[in-house]
Amino acid sequence: MSREGIFYLVEEKSLERTTHELHYANKQIIPLKQSCAKFLNELCLSHFTTLKGRLDAIKQRFSFHKNTPIFINEHLILMTVKENNRKFYLNYFKIAEVKSMDKGKSLIAFVDGSSLILNVSITVLQNRIKSVERLLKEPACK
Image (cartoon, rainbow, N blue to C red):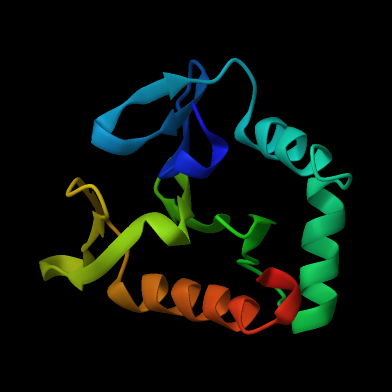
C-alpha cells in the first residue's frame, strides 16, 4: 500500500494492550506491528529526517505549542485528534469535509465516501485544519 494512500492511523489503548492500525480507502485496515510513532518516524527517515526533527522544526517555524501537524510529504500531512483512549492521525488530504453532529460529536467525511464519527467538537477539527493550512502556505510544503 502507498504511503500517500493513508487516510488515517489510529492508536487505541486498553488495560490489556495498545493496538495500532493504518486505514486506507474503502475501509481497508492494516494492523501495525509497531507503534504509530515508530511507523511515522520510519516514514520521516525515508526523507532523511526524524519525526522529532520535523515536529521541532514545525513548532519553531510556526510557533505551535501543541497539536502540531506532522508534515511527511506534499501528499501526507497528519493532524492528531484524541478521543478517550484513542489517538487519530488524520491525513488532511483525504478529508472531504467535517460536520458538526449533536452532543459534541463530529463527522469526518473522506474522499472515498467513507466517514468517521468522533467524540470531539467541530471546533477542535477546524483548528487542526487551520494549522495544516498555515503549513500549506509555506513554499517548502509544495
